[in-house]
Amino acid sequence: MLYGDRFYDFVCAMCSPTHKETIRRLDMGVADALHIVIFNLTVRNMNKFHHLHEEILKHFRNARKSLEGLYFHIQ
Image 1 (cartoon, rainbow, N blue to C red):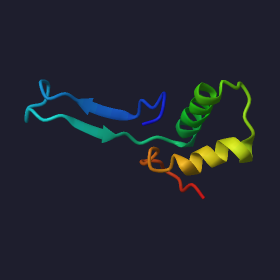
Image 2 (tube, rainbow, N blue to C red):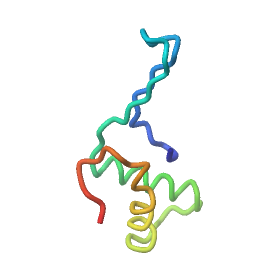
Image 3 (cartoon, one colour):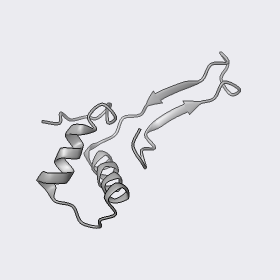
Image 4 (cartoon, rainbow, N blue to C red):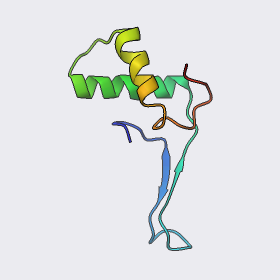
């Protein structure tokens, strides 16, 4: 899970009618995923600015599994 990623629907065991915890990935768009990637780069590297190809797109590719549920394909 990435820092700032709120695109999950979580129900605890006490609140669930089946008494099982459930977690479901919510759909997100490109802008949402970009926000998460830039936030993670900022937190990890303590930088305000990031290079598109060397940092942002590289992080997108590396975080592909964490960002499942997107409406687009990361190349």
